[in-house]
Image (tube, rainbow, N blue to C red; front, side):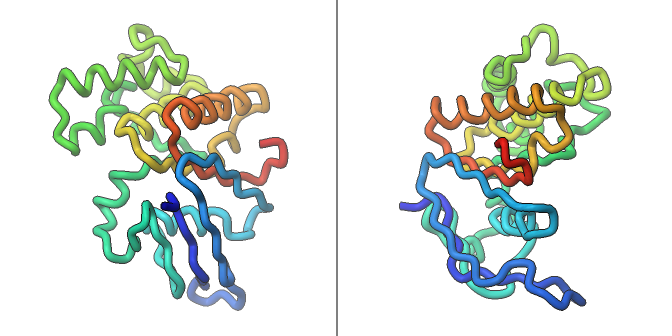
Length: 202
């Protein structure tokens, strides 16, 4: 079974005189680490946002784990998919711990399981839980914020992780560290990861 398939997917935004996506067909195996490379404006973000239905297809079909996404509730679908964006998206009024616990609370995890998840995920992204769980996003560097964003995205143990330019706002050295975290997560847990980027070095 494929983790994700795009079958003749098309998308044109209102008022545009060109296709954002034109007859795109891709098959991604479970456990693959896939990088989609292209310049700004080529449709990369449009493609990845369609997987979790932040954008809808005009025509064609997308499946996730063998199921057509159009037959699934968008909110339930998104809760099963990890999503990391360039802008990080942490809630500034919440601590690191609270940010990571957002989805576990929505999923009804008990406190013990949620606490253990925070510690495990922070350790996985190379942040000491004792030092970082009580900090606020403004007290973190850009690289540390992106690590927390990854920890939040993978805390629910998603089979699929979508990453939209996860290193785009970082310096080269920090970006390499973030990519290593994602590669290690892919290898350790055999999770499917899709990364989009304009950086040929990724």
